[in-house]
Amino acid sequence: LALEQRLRQALDLGEFSLAYQPQIDARSGKLIGLEALLRWRNPELGMVSPIQFVPIAEATGIIVPIGEWVLLEACTQAQQWRERSGWDFEIAVNLSARQFVREDLCATVQNALERSGLPARALELEITEGLLMSDPAGATRILTNLRDLGVKVALDDFGTGYSSLAYLKNFPLDRLKLDRAFVKDLPGNESDCAISHAVIALGHNLGLQVLAEGVETQEQRRFLADAGCDHFQGYLFARPLPAEELDGFMDRAE
Ligand code: G
Ligand code: G
Ligand code: NA
Ligand code: MN
Image (cartoon, rainbow, N blue to C red; front, side, top):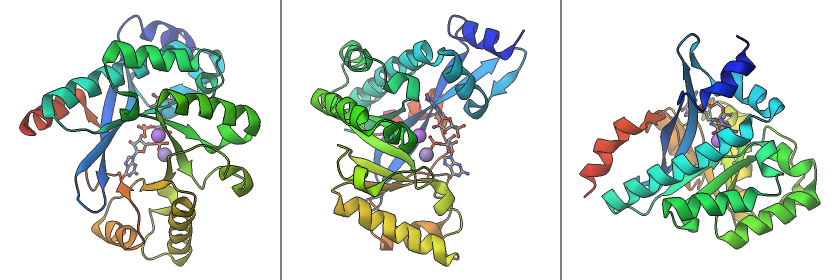
């Protein structure tokens, strides 16, 4: 069976799950959010990375029903944990280009919020730069509609795409996620130090929070904290974890 065929059946067969990676406040060290990351386990193929299947799901349009499932599942799980732990943290969900440009995006998001009971302000949607730059005017309209719902928007993998700074100032965004490519060689690499400082300053001057992705060492953490970075995500704090592994953690919060 071709990968595409298997992908079409995977939703109905319950082969998808979500892993959740903690996001940490740089100052307090406290949990402020979780990023939901899609996982696919197929009986014949084993674990298939989203890097392999998301592009196929995107090209074939299968990403639309998968994305709706991700949104509802992530909101439902997050709200359950929020209620159980009493912590007011956010859930971040990745949106693909296909999902972003659909007429019914706001209705889909609204539906997930209503069915899960998650407050809109606790949902953050992650989009990439390419998605904004292919049609800046259209993207601004979509972002404005999302903002009217009360959800937040983060620009993922920032620095690896083709953002025009002239446009960036006009997009209603909440957060920049500094790509891990720039974090990896901190603090030894001078260029990456300069880029990190610049992205943090740029974000703050545009009124955005800045999260550093892929933080793996104490040295990276210290450098980024000194540079004024707001939030961290990375293996230093936690890997993406299956829901079962976070369950116990959420209980202990009580
Ligand atoms: O978790 P991992 O490093 O394997 O993720 C690899 C890539 O897959 C990342 O770029 C991530 O943004 C993307 N990805 C993970 N989950 C989702 C999802 O639910 N929807 C979309 N569109 N992309 C996702
Ligand atoms: O494109 P996006 O930022 O959504 O990709 C997130 C991916 O990055 C996830 O698949 C996750 O597994 C991976 N990731 C998260 N933290 C780290 C880290 O500290 N180091 C590395 N190498 N990868 C990470
Ligand atoms: Na992401
Ligand atoms: Mn990223």
